[in-house]
Image 1 (cartoon, one colour):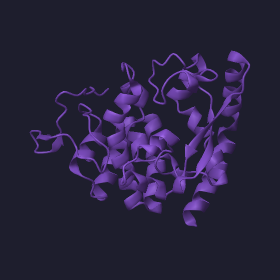
Image 2 (cartoon, one colour):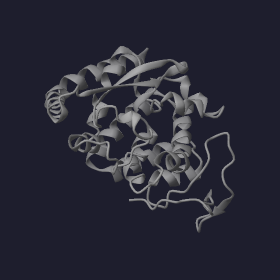
Image 3 (spheres, one colour):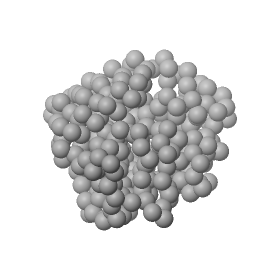
Image 4 (cartoon, one colour):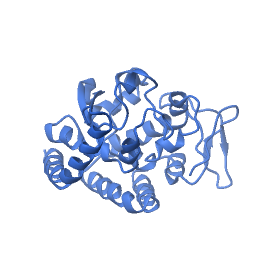
Length: 261
């Protein structure tokens, strides 16, 4: 009950405060092609229930019929205004409406498309035990997802290899250790990330240590090393190697690694 009240109050305040910016962006998106500035997408929520998530449209009309679900910064489907929307996460602000009506929470694992959920392992399905959120540990760690996939020839495949395994682990750590205090800290860290992503990442690492997260997850959360491939929870990781600090990480031999920005 406390979490729901927390969500409703902050979502209402957020929509009210952001309304002037949203109105300007809505007009700019509409002027580009004279189509709706909103994109309503089906996503899977708590318990596997499908809901309609509202986003500010950043891609051309019917873009979902022409390409994969993972999007890089170089994706040609993104409109000029869309690049601005994505850079400053303005498309996430409209999801406060979903929070207000109860489809989502401010904090929780990001909602996935049906095809993505169908690929979930048994353990990953635990992510559906809570309302999906606008932000969480993984949202801060992988805020630059589009940049990671920018030079990819197959963004969906690289997402499944480089990002999904770590996102799922971070999501499960949140689900298993969730609390009102953690939610408040994550909302604060998300706001800090607007000014200093490095500071926000340090806060995430501190939270992970307090939640007794595995060492390799804490290392990835720092985002200062090569992002190595892995497999989702409930699947074996690739054979492990150990760095100079004795931290075990998946061995990316034969797989594509990505140098972090």
